[in-house]
Length: 282
Ligand code: LIP
Image (cartoon, rainbow, N blue to C red; front, side, top):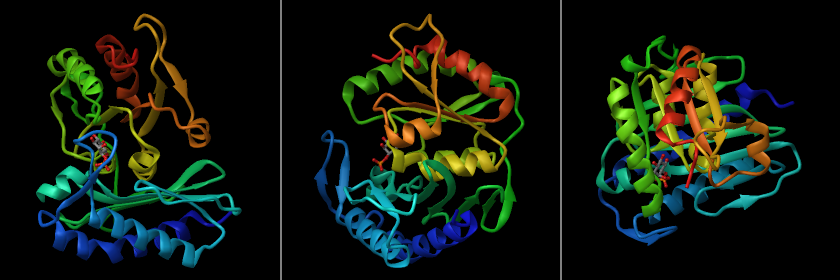
């Protein structure tokens, strides 16, 4: 198996090469297209950064597979797969609002083993490799040890589909009064990085894509946290349907819900998501 440290270091080197351009163009770019809905933005910089990152990966490791947000997909033969979000949090990027990042995750045999998330505006580099812990700008970081949901600062995000947004907002009516507060910063990758370094206590979101959260989930687990994945169920009264990272790697479900937090908060926050209807879906 390729060394996760080598994969992480290659991801970091490549991500660093696009960061200056992202910093320079943030807030000074036209929206070139929309995707799933009118609010799901794409800019020429997303496309440029993706092309650049994918070319660099394949130049260094031609037998690897790549899956990237703006459409690049390459089937590999090595068992290594790169999940690339050239700009996670494109809306923030368009407004030069902190919360967007470059996210590169790496799986070996369908298991996430390394990840890099760089915040171009704040200059933070989050890196993790299996068994090696998580670092922020080279220094080790860990998830918080909060045990009471009422004392938890919880990040979340909203999808682009208006009906899904309505349901996400409704769930917050139940969640918000029972936690310390809620943050909606912008992109999943940085939200997961925030869990890894204790900048928030937990993060959950319904409807993520693999490139949004591949790198960030390694940051969380290597920082001592827990990633729990659920499928939505037909009724909020039944047990949540949990799925593994390997299962979703080969067959990514549109209704996936991710919860990232520390070991102690996982059960109480799962119960809160269940009470809020987040795990029961449409
Ligand atoms: C974003 C996700 C985020 C979600 C946003 C958006 P994108 O990704 O990372 O978690 O809440 O609405 O989907 O599309 O900006 O790369």
